[in-house]
Image (cartoon, rainbow, N blue to C red):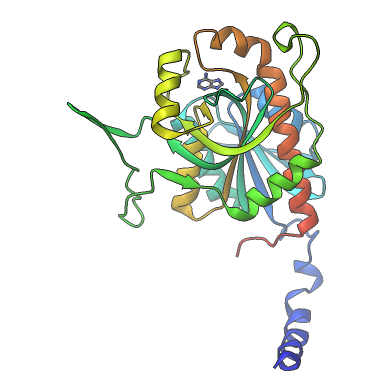
Length: 288
Ligand code: ADE
């Protein structure tokens, strides 16, 4: 049986792996799309692109190039769910990526996470996708216009991307928290696999933080991830959200964000860089 299979493979492989479709052929190479809301969240990656070229789509800039041997397209979405969804849909339609990665800062909801710690999102949830009624809220996913079905409230990351991210994290040199808040010396960066909650609100309230943690058991809150995950789910594209803590989403959030946003953006980008290196090493195939 096995030898018959090998014989069939031997016949088929030379047909599909002609020079025109070999990995390395830019026209056929798999593409990873990376989305970040703010310039500082994408700049470390855009700066590393080789053979960089710019695409303008409806006035938005998408930078395409090669990063550690993989074709990558990067764009700045600006803040919020709608902006992120627009960029995700345009990128999927124009570049047909194998996967979409979201990078950037977040507020922590898990009290064990401090600024500079990293969350790999196994799940994302839109915390403001609710029905309010007199006795509370019901959570429900938006209806997928393609299938007519409701999306799950919690969208799960692609398992393969999750595994690659965990592996990449063990090889990534993260920036530790430093300064007054780190007390005597910089503390090691913690990387957790958890849940990221998304909504159109910058959370700077201890009360809201507690509510989101209790209702969703989420580890971090931000403003784009689950919206991109919804777009990817509806269009059948694997997605992973990477966040680094810039603040604790409470009354000091805005001041902490000012202090830590740059380091948080850099840490998330470092992990995304590592994931892209893993993807390049794994020789992942392009989507058909
Ligand atoms: N991104 C970074 N910090 C945030 C917060 N506290 N709320 C929402 N998005 C954020």
